Amino acid sequence: MSDLSYSDRLSALRAVLVEQGLDGFVVPHADAHQNEFLPPDAERLAWLTGFNGSAGVAVVLRDQAAIFVDGRYTLQVRDQVDEALYSFHHLVEEPVAGWLGAVLPKGARLGFDPWLHTHAQKERLEQAVVAAGAEFVPVASNPLDSVWPDQPAPPAVPVVPHEARFAGRPSAEKRADLSASLRESGLDAVVLTQPDSIAWLLNVRGGDVDHTPLPLSFAIVHAEQDLDWFVAPEKLSDELRAHLGTGVAVQAPEAFGAGLDGLAGKRVWACPDSAATWVFDRLSGANTQLSRGADPVTMSKAVKNETELAGSRAAHIRDGAALVGFLHWLSINAPGEGIDELSAAEKLAAFRAPGEHFRGLSFETISGSGPNGAIVHYRVTPETNRKLGAGELYLVDSGAQYLDGTTDVTRTVAIGAPSSEMRDRFTRVFKGHIALATLRFPLGTTGGHIDVLARQALWKAGLDYDHGTGHGVGSYLGVHEGPHRISKVGASTPLQPGMIVSNEPGFYKEGAYGIRIENLIAVTEATEIAGGERAMLGFETLTLAPIDRRLVDMALLTDEEQTWVDAYHMRVRNEIGPLVDGAAREWLTAVTGPLGV
Image 1 (cartoon, rainbow, N blue to C red):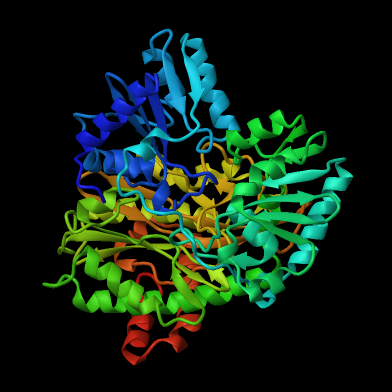
Image 2: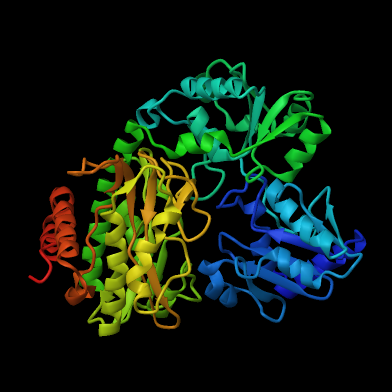
């Protein structure tokens, strides 16, 4: 990392903008594929500002600069970014477009990198810029790259096959289905820019970004069933090429533009919400007949097949055993002289590492003690690290990547005796969690329809949390996967059997503590309801790990809720108990007993 101060970095960027005749520049947390986790060479926002969250945008003008983050990062951004250099804004409540419309002077030229903005994002920002009497200017090369002296080289990690025993379906079958849907829609080709879609379609995995086994690449799938894959050839072994079989033509990424040009006059599908505006500009320049729609692989990937679901169940059992080992260790050692956020996160990773099919963490563990737990996506560093103190809450949100599944689980643990307020807030969060876990709902229900159920007990006390309640999860792919989610906003995709989604309501008291209870759940066809007139769906809980009963206020739970908790804990005890050693098994038996006993 460069030793330039953040003030120097900002000044250097402004100097380049002046040279290029620009009055400002937009710096999103993004790469050319709109990945959540970025390769090191694409971490421009972090290098420029110091903010390392997974969602954010900075706008640098000649006389001011601003940074926009969502509700998960409103506390983190103030810890990481110099308020003398940037003003802070909520990405949803104070969107970038609105701010630009208010501050851009007429005649200003605001630059942007067309590789780092989707077509839809570009259109929204351009509308605001033009309305302000300014110009939104695409740049041929990102000016920030010219001032980042030690910018890492692009990643080049080998691509490996993802075996059919984990994928469940051969790649050729998936590609044939996609090509058939193109023909049925009267289309000649679809352009894929999301690496997870391409990895799922080709049954391959890689390692170009942290925590998600992705090879960075682009693809063009043709209605005739052949596929052009634009990926660095040095990443591919002879074994991988044999795995691809016939019908996949490998080309270097530099040939992607020419590949788009080759679609001239054809009817082409591209996703405006995931493909870079550069792609749309190139397709328009080639005079293609553009059809705009969601990435067609996204839904197929989201609905897991039986092999993927079985793999997820198996992965969660192994992951649960690791988590039980850690929680037992924590019960013995915390609070203790050497137990802090960093050492606890390292210990949890050590419990997971020996597990069968383990391939790494699915995200950087959120290990937050006391007030740090109130930072929703807190990342512990040597500077912020604090000990687990008696009378505090410890929030640990973690997950792993296994060849047969991806996990994500959060537990909130009392270190010593919790306060009555902590128990009240925890139980209200828990009631919301149980409400979703036990829900039955008709076909066509979206995550937006059911989000309120997770919040109702908090709302009754005048409380809430500023993040979504659930996100989709991949199969040895992204820990955050669309298109489905459970949220107040942007959750319009109907839930379908086979989808995996998180159930994670929370509560955060700034400067004091954070609470989150997260299990992964799979959408299933519900058992028939006596007297019912419609087919119903429900959820199967996949995550298996005890929930801290010391934090439960029994007076707030209904009989039905207590019954669910006891049944869940019995299942955890029966399925995880045989996988842990004697002392941990005894502890597990004790902490999964019936409530109130």
